[in-house]
Length: 97
Figure: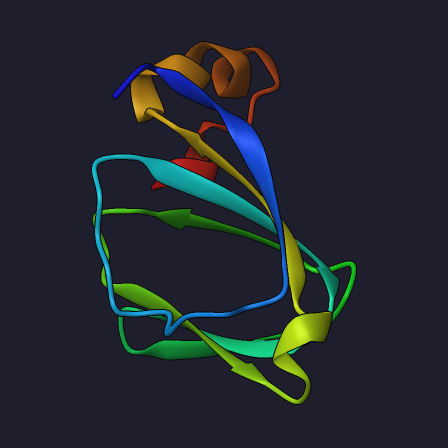
């Protein structure tokens, strides 16, 4: 994977979202719909406007409820070493720990 993958925007769920892990971090912004997002063993209830940042190496999965066609999100994937200089400059390095 490249250090940074340009974000994707997805509207509507037409397939089953499965448990997954990967070698990148994620920044997810929910635009529409509602979901419970499982990260490791913790559920986060997301509503439109919520932003979730997670380590992709941790097992995670979105559970969309309500109208699956209303679910809309933007997703940015990036490597830790890509964002570390920015976090250091902003003095918020602990964000990824």
